[in-house]
Amino acid sequence: MALFLLFLLAFSAVSADEDAFIGVNIGTDLSDMPHPTQVVALLKGQQIRHVRLYNADRGMLLALANTGIKVAVSVPNEQLLGIGQSNSTAANWVAQNVVAHYPATNITTICVGSEVLTALPNAARILVTALKFIHSALVASNLDRQIKVSTPLSSTIILDSFPPSQAFFNHSWNPVLVPLLSFLQSSGSYLMLNLYPYYDYMNSNGVIPLDYALFQPLPANKEAVDANTLVHYSNVFDAMVDAAYFAMSFLNFTNIPVMVTESGWPSKGDSNEPDATLENANTYNSNLIRHVLDPNKTGTPKHPGIAVSTYIYELYNEDTKSGPLSEKNWGLFNNNGLPIYTLQLIGSGPVFANDTANQTFCTAKEGADSKMLQAALDWACGPGKVDCAPLLQGQSCYDPDNVAAHATYAFDAYYHLMEKAPGSCDFNGVAAITTTDPSHGSCTFAISSGNNGTSLNSTASATDSKASGSPACIMYAGTYFGGILVMEVLVWLVVIL
Image (cartoon, rainbow, N blue to C red):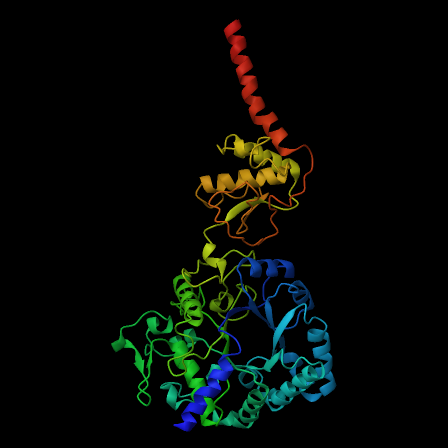
């Protein structure tokens, strides 16, 4: 009993450090990778407060400075051997990629390699040394308490994972795992685990029900039960996390928390992956977010109250990634920053404004030709049947008085008038869709919720467009209202004659 109480106290001490959080991984295998400032704008607009980078890209770290966003940087696998073989190389890496940016950029974690045991087994022998060298460099810079060091592992190194109480690590890796776990324990770090119920479901040959993989509600008689502990599991995720805890306990490590560094579901797949769908990806990630952040259900069935912070894989679809179609389609957004699907997060708190995906707007493209903007504006306010009265002098959307700002108002009004039909936000290539709400001051755009969005494709907002040529309102009045005036004069001439 005393040992059991100590076990609980150890976990309680660990979980008290930080509440559970949801973050995102940012991959870069895109044919048109957004600029770091665009990436950060998306993160801020979506209220994403935790990100994991697969490297320590200087541009991204600079863009993330002074945002408060917590950042996990990574030592790429290709740099692992050099760092694991040289303390000075590790120190230089920390100096250039961490110390040079901290604290302006809120770096909280260093991931040393990724799935090294399974992806780069030849480097396994120096993995723990690399972690220790990186940690020593942090100690020398007095940053070891602020920044954790660990290495993401594939959940496939856990064997016999159900029931969780029988799970154990692949014994062939014990010479690496024992010193690794010892390091994590002594440094107060996490066991990082890449956990994919999608693959567990796909490889189960029908044994794992789809609803069980997707966090869908199950009746008690349909839940999986660990016969040894009598604990019920309603989803694969919790069972896998508890399996990791049991695997660690079999090696006599009982106070290392689990952090899930990758988890998600693909939204599209080849013909042999029929369950890689938009609906299932939406369901999994929406349920995952709610599950991790639910304050009433923190932790797992066997370890309640122990936060399991998780990074979703991933921010963008990566169209240049090799492998099956599903490998390219794990993202929450496309490279323009538009949501792949609308997350169902009602009641989950202020995380991921992606559930405002239906609140898209149509704005003038930054740098678009002013004459083309003017022509499109005139069309929208004329044949397009948009009510452009708010653009008149003295009205709510007159300021700023320039063609881009006025075009943005007209484009968006037409876009909503057409119920966001495909092609209704183009205007001969001078308009683009964004989730940024261009509303400003008393100028409220259609279906404006008051939530700040994110500039997703460098489109201009009404507050920062640059004018060129005559003021839009004057040209608009001179073109459309002027046309009406000419018609009235002609009518009177006919009457007089």
